[in-house]
Image (cartoon, rainbow, N blue to C red; front, side, top):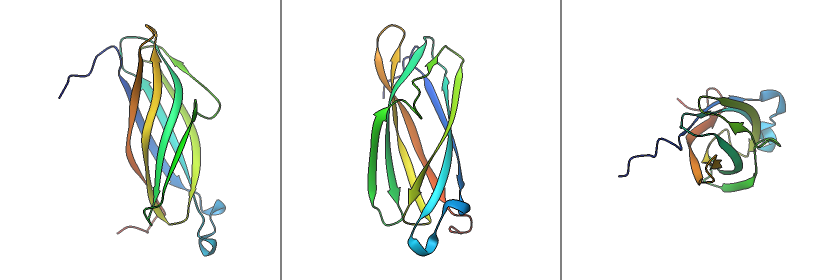
Length: 128
């Protein structure tokens, strides 16, 4: 196992919530919002260029989403700075998960991936 380079450290945390007002369970539509906080814990400024999400529903159906930035932005984070945004997704099941990575570019031109650890999307009470 290699030691992470302290110049390129991005921490990602996620908080999720079910959106019952946008969900239609009888039509297999379960809407969720997720709020992501991206913190530059590294020694260099870093710009978020791309996102890559892997979304898995309770039936093990997988969707991949790739694109530039997050919600139309490509934030530049100085060391110690954070950026928070909220987005959403719709699943066909009341439980699912997401994970992925952000494509980053440091101030020295070095490109690197900031991993997003798996997190659960679940209708309250769907899991015991």
